[in-house]
Length: 418
Image (cartoon, rainbow, N blue to C red; front, side, top):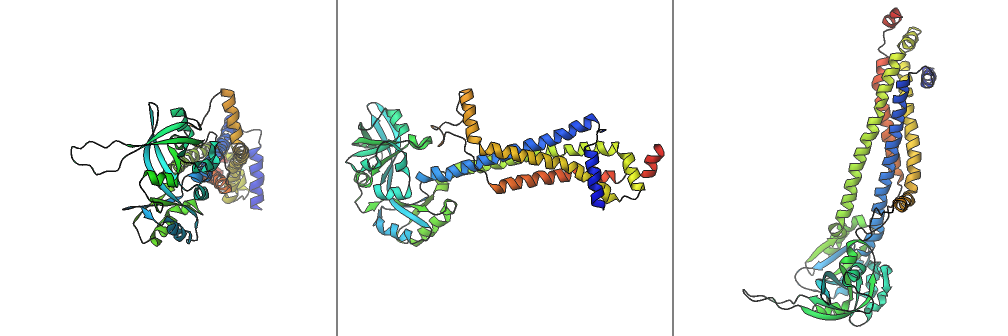
């Protein structure tokens, strides 16, 4: 009975034509503020989720999930080490790697690069780099003196498939005090292909076949610097790599995983996500507490009605519930509208941003700087639910004080002044 009366009174006051214009404006602004806060928060979280998904699906498709690099000497019998690593139930694939810092030279131009000597077949099991070769073929890497380079390197040195280029490697030798540094080793190579992935990877990475890299670095066919592993869960990579390393008791190894090489990107996304969530939650909070102003004005306007209701036997709980429902309706309406609009924008965020780019003739993300050139979006239901709950809880909290003040109206004092 009391709840029915509270609901009836809340509806009557909510749609009352006698409500002051200023109170109606504050009420509408609180609803609009909650709607905008919820909408922007859903869109922002979806964008952050999109970046996380692209990070996992694209960047980590060519960046090794983990590497085990020998400390004191080259790794021998690498096939046995890979087979031993594959015994771990969460390791999906493994491949050998030889790597070094080097310089590429074309005429008078130089470019610092990261050299990767890989097994052509096994590398495709731990990396999708072959899918990003945009000229030439990944299999062409098997040719003698062949090299595949990033598109950024090709642009810097004006290289294309078939061009000759010189690779400069430091000569490993013990130095004595006062002795000059030895001249670098020079190798003549042929560009067999280029790959275009995006970001700094295109500007720094080159691939050689494993046997060629072993010859350059004075390693035998059984020697490599380490192995690269692909695991079933990228976020469990640090733990899995430690477990695999503990199984390999023959040599000391450096344990690397993607969180050490590319983890800053994920950390940046998480930081931006947390700051954005905090800032937009404050926007929702400010909009929600506009409800306080609205309800206080309504309570002051309805003091006579409240006094009559109390005189007729209405309980303080009924009065309080009436104003809580009235204020909460603004929060519910704003949350529903914000959720609907936010879901629509988040679902079409990539297309909307591309439309804005075409209208303003600009590009928000450059593929030459970042590893993608579009704004991704991925809607996660838990984020939506949490956002809705936060907005409703803030709206409910904002109604408590004005509703409690309504129960403190003194009927004798109010009606005596009427």
